[in-house]
Length: 309
Image (tube, rainbow, N blue to C red; front, side):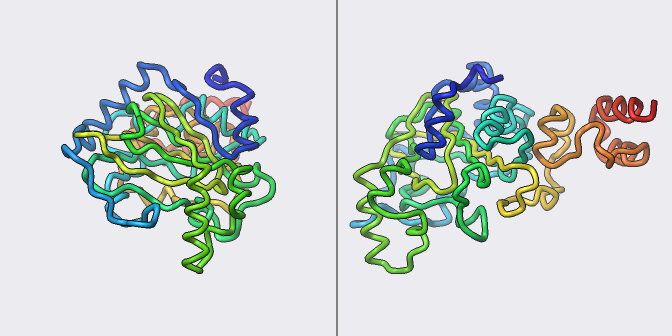
């Protein structure tokens, strides 16, 4: 599944911290996910966007910006629920992090609509809510977030803007996001504006980026506009320094939508032990089948039978 990206994309991610890859998903995949977004969140925003309210600043964070965020699993088809663990995304994450096993620690749909909020944000780095320490100097010891667009995103549809690592170092260092000095923070914001790049792209495109990359959300101004996106975050399995969701905390959500349709590799991204793992016994298989009656446990049963032979 590596025909959807080139070595140059991985090189750009490692060098710049972020790279746009247009038309990563097929039209059929995009259409299926769009149908889920429309059914869950709706399709139309307001006639006009909100007026700018932050004169002199890039923007601020506020709760209404995140009104349309929903972590998987979501009560809809497998299309939206499993797109964040698409085999090609897994392949990109494994190569980017130089590992043969990755886990998903955040995967959430994010629908934005014109007029529902002022989505303009300040530049920030994501590591502050992905780890309790700081980004490692070894990019493979951090993580990779992949922003996936499932609607056409122009500058009027709130594309993420980012600054490459080389350009950001002309203005600040990654720990600048933690400054408590208002004047320094404002100077950083204004300086980064000179180097920002847009991730505007057609539906089906992706933007993989690192947790130490300066980026920000922008406002929707397109009349009746919407932006359908999904964010999926991968880390090397066993990296306990990085995290966000505890998946079991969401046990009341419709996990059967995922378990009944996912491959063993996709489930392993959520921390489910793969076929052949010592966890699996006749008893744990029986319990798992009771919890998820529609889950096809054949690969796990076959592996257990082969081990016993």
